[in-house]
Image 1 (cartoon, rainbow, N blue to C red):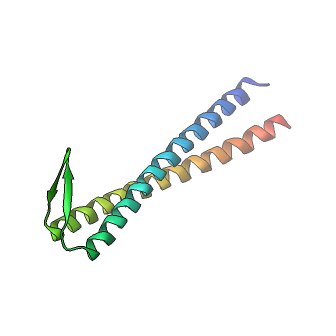
Image 2 (cartoon, rainbow, N blue to C red):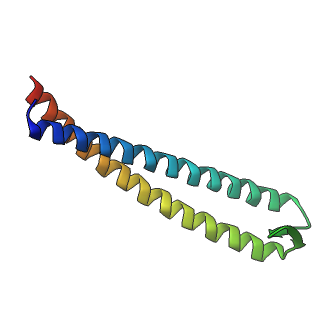
Length: 106
């Protein structure tokens, strides 16, 4: 096998590892978004609201807590969008490399 082909296979392996890392990050962020959505839904049905700070739970203003959660949700959605764009670029690059390697191996 040519050295150039071996290098492309190595690059392809690295791209696949990066794609997997981005997938894990995206899933973690999406889980956090679901938790925030659940908390926002719960806020709509309760009179009292509480916030955990460190190891204690304190009473919190419902409106402020809702604004804080929505802000955090918006930030997480932006991160997910950024990761999705990076994933797309990596997949495109990996696809190109895979085609090149397959042609060299024929």
